[in-house]
Every structure is written in C-alpha cells, then in structure tokens.
Length: 275
Image 1 (cartoon, rainbow, N blue to C red):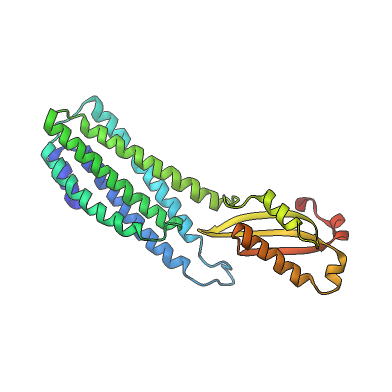
Image 2 (spheres, rainbow, N blue to C red):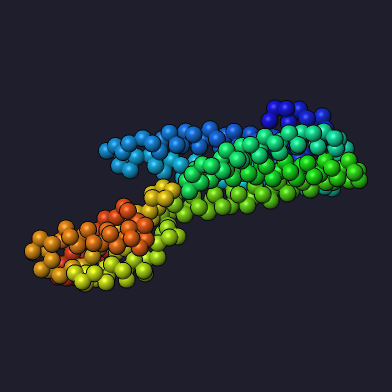
C-alpha cells in the first residue's frame, strides 16, 4: 500500500491512489475481522447470555460502511478528473497494477478456502476480491494510456472500482442489517413453520412465532404452541417438545428453538401483544 501511494503520486494516477485507499480499508477489515472472531469465541456470561457472537455481524456492517465512504470519496475525485484529466504515466500504472494483481490473486486464493458462510469472513473476502478487480481495471487503464494516450482511462478505471465497492458495500449492509434488525432468516418461511408444527397430533394451534438470526448460520425460533390439556396432565409434554424441535431441525435447519406450551384454555389470557 505504501509503495502504491508513492507510485500514485509520481504517476499522477487516481486509480492507483484509489487502490491504495481500498487497501487501507482492507487492512482495517482484516484487523476488525480478527478482533470480531476473537470476541465471538468468548463464552456466554450473565451479562451477555449469548456471548459476543454478534460481534462478527457488527464487523461486517463496519466493513460495508467503510467501503461505501471510500467509494464516495473516490467517485468525487474521479468525476473531477474526467472533466480535467491530468497527465498520467501509463508505464507506472501497468507495473504497479501487475504486482497488485499477483498479490491479490494470492490473498483471494487463501480466503476462498475460508468458511464464507460467516458474514464476517464474507466482509473481508469482499474487500480483497474488490481490490483484485480494481487492480485489473487499473492494469487495463495503464495499457490504454500507453497504447492510445487516452488519459481519461485512469478516472474511468477509478469509477469501475467505485462500482465494485458500492456493490460489495450494499451486499454487506443488507445482510448485516437484516441480522441486526432481527429479520426473519431467508431460509425460514414462517407460514411453513406454522403448518409443519400444526401437523403434530398433539398441537391444536401455533401463534406468536418469531424467527431471527443470532449470528451467521445460527437461526433462532420461538413460538407459543397450544396443546391438548391431556398432554400437559399425563406428562408427555416433554415428548411433544422433542417432536417440535425435531421438526424444525429436519425441515428448516433451525437447531436453537424455544417453545411455550399452553393449554387451550389459556388462549383467552393471552396479552394483546402476544396475539
């Protein structure tokens, strides 16, 4: 990154400077992801009963915000340079970008083997992959400048980087925002959940169903289940809970669930917010 900043100043290239700025956010993303992974591994406590598992979601959200901010700053300068293009040294662009492509290909290959079901890892991977595409665009811009002397290729390449960064930022912010706002996991259809749970012979009704994601690949569900009075009287309630949980695991891959069993006579006592 330091080498690229020097080269960008000497060559007068915004594309190289944009790549360097993106590499700075990469470094921050990697550091934040490592710290979030460390926090997520902490055990639950009385104060944080789920532990710090949401730390990785916060890290992904921060990554999305940093990509967005850097993209806006680069876009502003790129548009200015499109109007009044400065002189750019094409050979410097080609050499530095070629080195950048090689480095980021290696980094991308390493991260491609990681568990990208983790939103935290996906955030870091988005940074590195976008950086790779940015270097490829810068390399192409350098070749165009050398071949045709078209110096607007440099800010055009920068806008390509901006587009990639905005796409990555949007994906991260939407995914992390869905988790932070307790949105229903995409893999869980609440109507289907109600239907499957209602098919159990002891179940008379299902209501107050909530599903959310605690952290990557950890959906959680809770529900009030109305059962026959005899089920609560004859001691088979535990078996009913086992079947309810088996249903969720088998059909919806939800392993963390909480059920409140209620007799049919309790429906009249439900609070309005539990309708």
